[in-house]
Amino acid sequence: MLNILKILSILLIANLYPFTIGYAELEDPEHIKDLHLIQSYFKKRFPDIPFEDFANGVYALDNSARENWEALEEFPPYEMHIDSGDEYWQTNSTAYSKCFPDGPAIKHQYPKWDEKLNTVVTVPYAVNLCRQSHALSKLDYMGIEMNSLVAYIAIQSRNEIIDITIPNEKALAAYQQGKKFYFTRRGQLNFACFHCHFDNAGKKLRTESLGPALGQTTGWPTYRNKWGALGPLHKRYIGCNKQVRAAPFEAQSETYRNLEYFHTHMNNGLPINGPAVRR
Image 1 (cartoon, rainbow, N blue to C red):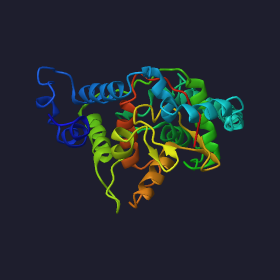
Image 2: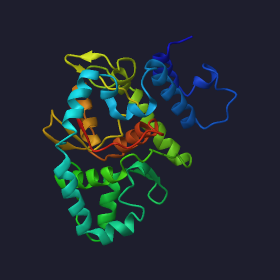
Image 3: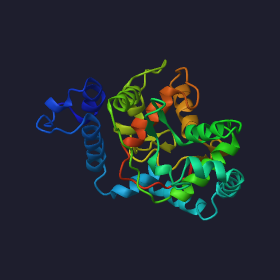
């Protein structure tokens, strides 16, 4: 039988794995099978790690890095951004409350499929849709106001359980596009996302440990020491593409929103723990 990495990289994209690893008798949709396969892979790969601890990313695997991270979390560098985000929310609370009646604790519900727009909507994308509908100017997706606002939304959502749904065929097509992106090689280095974050998860790249795919979307926006600033998940996508010498897409492009849809769906059942600190 093919090893799990080959199954993930070849059969997931080809949608052939039901005939290879015993799912033929199940009637679950494709994304449910994917979820089971991916989460089972990491549970078997790291059997001593409690499932919910994967929400802590690489710090679930690297004990020395975890100690430093826990020390940082006592006085987190993103704290002032939460306060600013609270102010931004209150400044336009009438608009945001109408757009997000369950909010601001909504991070665990996104990305979601928008039936009217026929597209995947992330939290930052939804914020700008809301602002436009109330005659407010759009915020820069990389800017501090947007990321402070999303940090406030994330802290309000902390410990809520990720529950991303794929409600219809159009949503499934977007999910499949995101999945294909994740497992497709690109750039001069000919790497795919899974090369670092599946088989090589926990291994060292220079002095840094590579984080597992399971749990990677739980803590955004994130204050990265490398950036010296708070930043969004799509900034990381852009950076990863550049690292493999591939042309990146724009933040909140349809390509990256679909990627986030797949990427977050694999983390269903994990708690939101953003904003976070990462190296």
